[in-house]
Image (tube, rainbow, N blue to C red):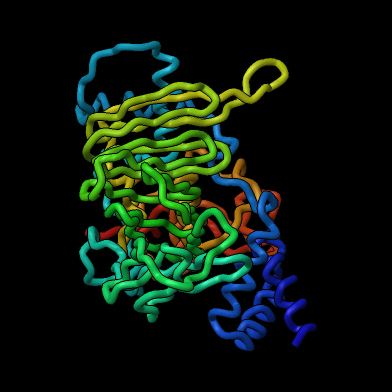
Amino acid sequence: MDQDKIAIEELIRKQFLGGISNSEMADLEQRKSNYSEEEYDRIVVRILGELEGQLPQDALDDWMPDYEEIKYRGEAIRRQGKIKRHSTFGYAAALLLFIGGMLLYFFYPYKKEDAMLHLESPCLGIADDAEIPLIESSCLMLAADSTWVRAGQDTFGTIVQLGDLAVSRTREGLLRIQREQVQNSHISNLESLDIYTAPRQQCVVELEDGTRIRMNAQSQLSYPLRKGDSTVVHIKGEAYVDANNRYKSTPLIIGTEKGKVTVTRADFLIRTDTGNMKTMLNAGRMEVYSHDLHKVKSMVSPGDFVYVGTRYAGYNQHPRDTMGYVADQDFKEAKMWTRKIRVYKDVPLVVFVGEMSRWEGFTIKKWDCIPKDRHISVSICYQSGREEVYSAIRQAGVLLHEEKGMISFCPEDKRDRVAMKFSDDKIGGLR
């Protein structure tokens, strides 16, 4: 058994690092059957911890705006008369930079183009604005020193008690954090309760102040074990935060690697990693603070978008944080990842690949090889799987290859072709 455990750990490492072959993937699936779901989850989380900092980079880490594409799309929209007129306040170059940052994350143009839905999709007959059900919420928690607890779809009631902090899962699927005085409860040496989601998982968490946070796949939420005057949580990954029905008047503070968000009543989207932080407001009021810039930006109108990120400037390419702001963005389209059916209309391919790689858990060999001038229109069911994603990409006329389990868009990677280019006349659409 020890030898089998060593073997499966090595295969999992290869899977996360993108170096697993087809035969090794089959071997991993076979060995996985020797473990319970909870045992396998624990192995996966431990390997993820060991590989921290070694995993492939985020799709936007090294991205720079495509100014020609931005200019082209701006002119096309103006010609069609489908963009609101706004007064010009700032420098044009700075505005283009901010819009460029927004385009690669919350960009969905107004071009009316039908999106193809794969006819074998398990989501046929479902409204395209239906969200992933709360009952399907699931996650892993680091509840005590080296102790992992799985909260699956079949888990209900109290899951863990750490001091006066209790975590339970309701019959509806909500993961609820509350303070309850219990005698002889376990006191952890950890400072926070850490909640993780794996690929193809979302988890809806209700904090003790009534705030609800929907975590996207491959995200992390850290909640302090000790009670403070304000509610302070940390997020890494992607989440939708609804703080409109909080019980407290003291601020909710969400910390990230690049800064923090302070809010009393609002609902918003946040995406954060080591290199950047992006937020978009739906309703209410919030403030975004940058650690390095010591700068605060208020968000007060629906569709306000703020970006804080590291860029490299100057002859020696020194890292420097910047903060950008864009108004009047489409919140509904930016919240697409919460739906059962994700409808992408004329979206940059790199955005689609980034969202799908987070959800499905696949890795990309070189993000720079993804064609920057290619767009895609498609409807993808959240239960479809990787092959549906690959099929959608190839039907958009883009070559896709597999090399040792890693997906590549580079033309030199011609072996183990996963997809071939289809002519435009074979691209179908919903009518």
